[in-house]
Image (cartoon, helix red, strand yellow):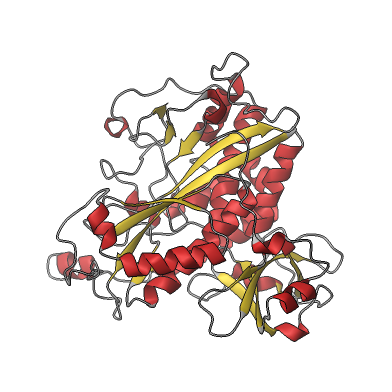
Length: 459
């Protein structure tokens, strides 16, 4: 990753005078007005294109940001106005994209959310990332990020009581075992990936590489590095595009952190570096090309604050099934040079490309919140001039756990961390915790097959 962002020109970045002009130029029939919710689900409205313009005051209830992944709402709704009034949606013009799988010409527009007085909705995950970016700008810095996103292809699963299985590929057979980096194993799903590539091109998702990961029919894509908000938009849209494309090929694509018992989990690794706005140089390297004090302070910030930010990067009960010893996922926040057993890896690179890879987040997390949390932790370390521990040269799996082991522990840690609450926003944290505590409470009411198998007749 170089120190300067590479932003791929999108078809929506031509100098059009208005949204309506862009709609007419593309013969659009319908608009998907989208906002990412706490989970990263696309919420919004469908609107006839002829009725959409910059002046249209699209509204949604404020409580949409308190909706859980199950569609419920928490008892604690103190983060929203008791009247559950309207919030106003404002389009991000640079987010305009055609929807490649729609039967009729359709455009997707990501929106930001505001109150009637023009103030931003602090609970919006996209705003939280904007807020962290503003904190960096106050120091004259711009973060650069590049995600690595893993996912599984699985056979359609119509009964949630049955375990997931790998899908059947072109050969007519499912993968019998793990095929890390196998080209032939990826080629088993060539028709699906060809369509996915086409969809990503239309959606202006800048894919860099695709490879087979360790699990059966587990894949990983890398996005080209760039501006954190735009990259998070791409990751958000990639998840939707992948699920949609897989369905059209009679498969499911899942970004669950741990979808299958005996297979590795899926991660959302974040490579991050910082550019000085005045010089355009990577501040993680000094004038001699060596690692700078700010580089080490950024690592130290991640070490200190990432455990408190755990619920943002591992937001579901299933997330913690991935983070187990010797299963290709970190169990602590130790760091090391080109060491994949640690939570914070420093890849080999030139001074211009010096960066930190945060390997803790899961693929199930909201990309906006993962990037916001990871950058916030590093920024706090630089603000406080923290110093990291010594780098690990051996196997970090032989070292103790120092990350929360459950969602309940992680939520408590976030609530108890004043610096993180302040940089992310008190109101956001209150809303996020309310949503996740409700989901955790709902999960505790479920009796698993393990409990029926081992406890029913034995206790």
